[in-house]
Length: 160
Image 1 (cartoon, rainbow, N blue to C red):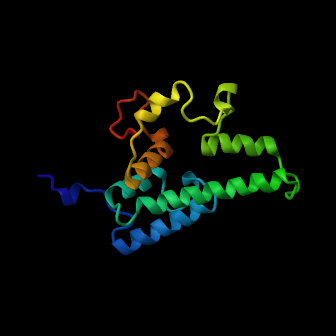
Image 2 (image 1 turned 180 degrees about the vertical axis):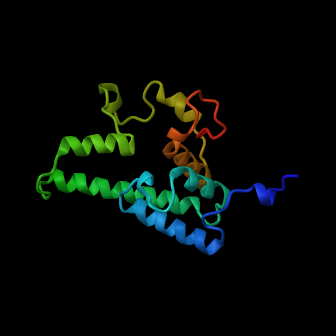
Image 3 (image 1 turned 90 degrees about the vertical axis):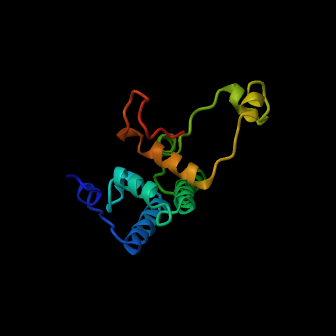
């Protein structure tokens, strides 16, 4: 007869202390501007599992902060490169990186207006509802792990 203890996967980080150290290492890795895919401690599926199962050891606000700091590292590179402070800076390669890493896209003329209540935006703003840090972090992790999800949209781990 199966038991939960026997059927549970062996945990890579079985204790709170090891999970917290893993979270610190992951956050430092991401904050330095590296992707979740290059984290040497675990793959994105394992990281998502730990973030969902042990939110007290993988605090969503810490993961969010690390992602913002990682983006800041890349933006600093772009700023320094645009000012001419980086030798051999390749603006095209940097732009391509930011489009992939940060979801940047080219704007159409209509998108360049700074009016958040432009036609079509007012209705979208009415439907906006604030989300908790945990919901945002899990949503970001869902986006980061999207390649692991089914492509038919019926996965149980959709971002929303």
